[in-house]
Length: 87
Image 1 (cartoon, rainbow, N blue to C red):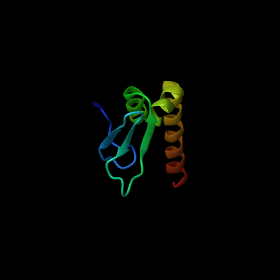
Image 2 (spheres, rainbow, N blue to C red):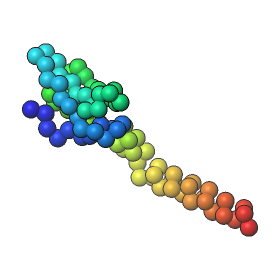
Image 3 (cartoon, one colour):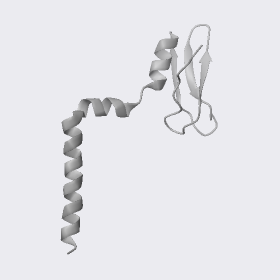
């Protein structure tokens, strides 16, 4: 049985596993307003992994700590520049 499923990354509703004889997939519970789905996959593990994967984690991992600090410093610079520009 599918467990530890994250909520839909687009609307936040629960995930609904669709277990078949040959393939598995997961759909968003709100099928009328949200068409989020993953699959078909051969194994339950592949299906859960695909549904639970979030792109933001990969981006943060590749950027690393120095990249995040760099973005923060650029943002801080822009705020200071805008503050002193108005004086």
